[in-house]
Figure 1 (spheres, rainbow, N blue to C red):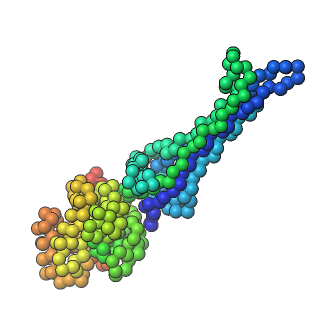
Figure 2 (tube, rainbow, N blue to C red):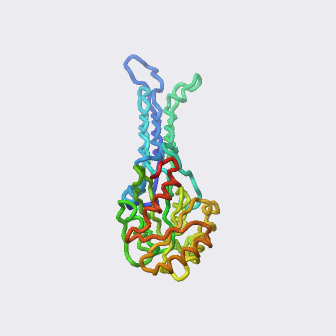
Figure 3 (spheres, rainbow, N blue to C red):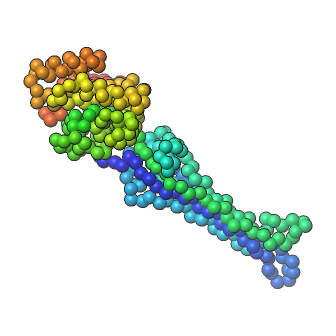
Length: 333
């Protein structure tokens, strides 16, 4: 499934209602006194996480969220009504930044998390509030306090069990289609995947979420090629499936480049569980595949799985290994 992982929106809390300047006017009551009520509160702006969401796509079509103003006070000491709050629903893993895209306001990384983005304006006092033994007929009523407003950025760091990483055109989308029911765009050129893709992998009567992330390039940790956005998704994944194109001349260099980008972005990423797959082996001679696997195993110190996403050769072995990592309690045949 496709999803939007970044959106800019405008939020505004409601102004408070105005206080009322009113005096009691009834027959046979000569000095009725002040009876102006207070204004009501405006609406707050809240953000909540929802387990049913995994995209920010709703915020592509609506960018402005404004809470209503509180009701004005009126005579007979009637207080204005409080306005309802505006609640923004976001997926778990959404970060909210100021307009500069650098100042983090809150990281919505827990289910059922709730955070008040903007406080509403309080209602103004009516003139009955200012009545004292000295001043029994005050002619003061306050306007409501203004609410707050700002532009903010929503950025979703995908929370998936396994993240597919690798250089562009390594065959990640092909593997996703082979291992799950997802149908990502597949073509024989780099950067076919421009947005993260999700697929649910079913095996051994269990399932896990596999995320196909757009290909990383050199200096991605500096933001090149939208690298920060894509590396942020890897940060939240439980494990990594490192896909390497077997048709490259130097597969070890391809592996080292991606590991370097991970380490430069966040050192802890290199300690995540990693499964290495040498893809497109059906395009090479068996001896060449064996040699490249040995080179990769020597460089990484890990087992390398030779696979073909097109023919699904070796895909089951990779899925089984990943299942052992993300679902250690599952009994595998």
